Image (tube, rainbow, N blue to C red; front, side):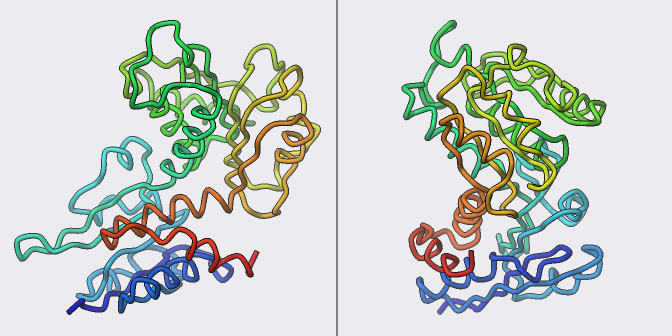
Length: 298
């Protein structure tokens, strides 16, 4: 018999979160007696009693708490440690002992979208050996922003074996901090990756020429006129917009007008949610059920 467990989303201003609908639909599909709830909190200390409860199965963690979850965890994944943010808590019992693990699934959603785009263009998978000077040697990714989501984006591009990652931010010093933190890391194929910081707006498309652009700042912050130059002279590329409000951002409009593929923040939310569900339950996520559950809400 499966013991009922409770899952939560911890953060602030969560009343419109789609996560409860997403995960509760999946629990119901697999006939699991679990439940996922919203728990707004000023700090993780305020919900420590929920985390300590024997029925606690795990949680989604949103900003600003992603940065303060580390002390709560018995174990932390390599990805979460490198990114410097935890967005998923997983409670397990091992050898009679309760173990709380911190992980980050934000990067996985981005990584999958980038990999699918690269595969559609004939680039080798990140799991395949890439020869020096081969197809991915020229791949450049541009990350707009320098917060926690930007760190996940840089990690995703690194795992996808990009040769160059450019981080653009209005306060360039914040972007330079990410460059230092990721300096010297290589992708899965062992090749070096050049990571650089530039001031936003990006001064000249010739200096960057990205194949992939990932927006990690609030959707209303980026004006279409600020980014349309990024797509000049290129009719093929991928934009991933992590914000899902508004539904169509200036970055998305500029990319579509240039003929680029666009994946919105809702798709990123879904992808990382699929990974969370698998981590919590050990089951394959019912992708279509989860997609359908939120279709009427967006």
